[in-house]
Image 1: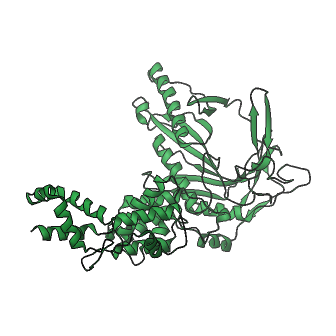
Image 2 (image 1 turned 180 degrees about the horizontal axis):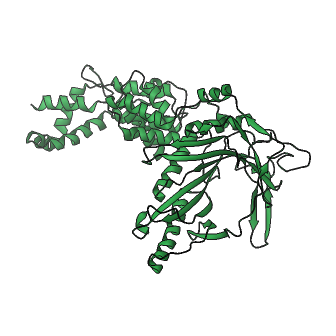
Image 3 (image 1 turned 180 degrees about the vertical axis):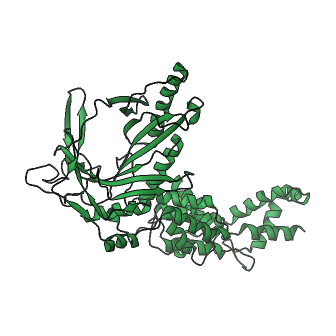
Length: 511
C-alpha cells in the first residue's frame, strides 16, 4: 500500500468497528432481535418506538457477551461505567438520541496480537450502544420508509488506536476480529448482513512529525470496500503531494462515505458542518456497576480463543504429520459457521476442529485429517453443500475410517460410499450400508473366492493373459504400465481389491 504514496510519507490508520451483539433480545428492551427475512416493523416494542413513558432496562445477556469481547481483546474492565445520550435528529432515530458510552466506557486499554497481522494492535475502548432503525430511501419519490426492527439492537463499538500503516494490515485486523468474535460467541460478524461495520480514520504524515489531518470514511460494510476506500484516499493525497512538490498543503478534516459502484469516496460533511451531539448522562440508566464475582463468572465461561486453539492443535498433532495448513483449513471452517444466540453452546453443534478431534480418538490423526479435507470437504464442495457434521456424524465417519484401516473396504469404494452417505444421509450403520452397496472387499491374499468366485491371484493371472503387451513392457522395465494392469483388475473386481496387494501379487507372478 505504501507504493501509492510519495517517498518520505507514511500512512496512519485507525478503525472504529460497530459490531451487532448476537443476543436474542435488544439492548434495552425485551423485543426480539430482528432477522434479515423478518417483515418490516414486526420486531419492536413501545420502547424501541420511543413512545412516552417507556424506560430502558439493560439486557444482562448483552452485557455478558460484551465482557467476552473485552476479555478476548485484552481490555481492562471498568467496574463502574455509565451511559450517555448522543443527540442528533434523524428519521432513523425515534428518540432523537442514541444511548452510548462516550465518556465512561465499560472496557479500555486493550491489546490484540495476531500472527496474521504481525504487530500488536492497541484497543482504546469498547462501549455498549444502541443500533438505529433502518431507513429505505426512494430517490425517485424523495421519500424514506422506516423499519424499526433494528432499532435498539445491541452494538459494541470497538475503537483502536491509529496503529495500522497499510490497508493490508487493516483488512487482516477486521478478518481476525470477525474470527475472534465468532469464536467467543459475541457476534456472527457478517458484514454483508450489517452485523459488522467499520469507520476508518486515515491520515498521512512524514515519519517523526505529528499525524496529519484525519479523514473519516463511515459505514463500510465490506473488507474489500475498506481497502478500496483507503487506496482512494492515498491516491488523491499522493497526487496532491506531487502537485505541490511536498510543500505544506492544508488537508481539510471531513467525513466521507464510500460509493460501492464507483469505488470512490464522497464528502458527507466537513469539520465545520459536524453536528454538536450534546452528550449528556442518561438519567434513566445511572451507573453500571460490575462486581468482581460477575466479571470472573463470565471469564470462566469464556470459550477458547482461536490463536490458543491453533497453538494447541499444532503442539498436539504436528508430530503425527498434521500440518499447519491442515489446521488452518479447519479453523477457517469454524470461523464462518453459525453461532448460537446469547453465547449458549449448542449441544448438537460440532465444529470442524471438534469433528476432527473426535474422529481422531484411537485413530491416526494424519489419516483422519487427510480424509476430512481431501474427501469429505472435497465431496461437499462438489455437491455445493456447506460444511456440516449433520451429513455424516462422528460415529459414522469413525466407522467408515475403521473399514478403510482394516482393509475391509478399498479407498475408491470408500469414496463411493462417502458420496452416497452425503447424498442420502441415513441412520443405517456404515458396514450394513457398505454390504447393501456391495462395496466391501471380498478379495485378498487369504481369500479363496471373490465376487466372481475367483481368488485375487487368479484375477492377476487373468490380467497377465489379457494384457500381454503391457506385461511385456513391465518385464522390459517400464513400471508405469503397471497402473494400466491394476486398472484392469479394479474393473474386473468392481474396485473391491487393495491396490498395493494386487501389485505385490503381480510382481510375484512376473519374477
